[in-house]
Length: 168
Image 1: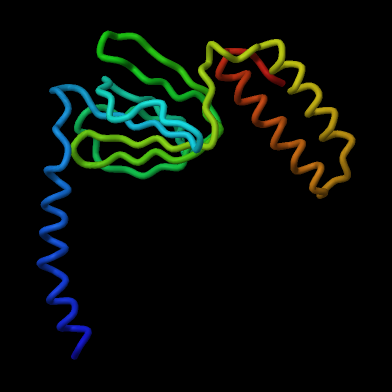
Image 2: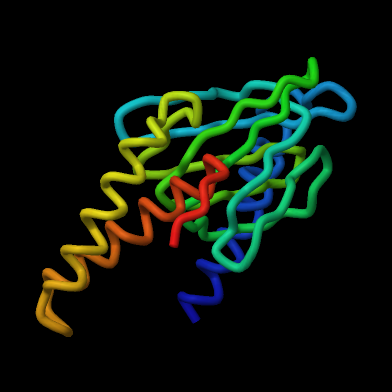
């Protein structure tokens, strides 16, 4: 009995809270979306109007534009591309994370690490990739060292692919 009363009492409050949330932020300009891009140590974008974001989803790459249907997606290591109003592209290598697209043309990108693609040294990626492959080959099968080495191999492969390098 008490549970039913509590549910009935909670509904109007929940509906009022939902109505307040819908009107909290101004809508982005037509054809644009709001982007929030956060790392643990800093915020790269805070409610900035952009044209679109290309997300490296764990199940495949996809583009988020204004009025995109709400979606929550895990990101894999790869290239995140932000397309600005003026047509300029900004590319980041992300080490995974999550993308949350909300009603009202707003998307949150949350990831543990992100590096501008222009700041990545291709020679260092190749060197680290080869070192990680050697480490993986010499590690005991099934060991923690082998697993860590394979993570290094895949991360460096993803960085190389984002730079347009063939990593074998």
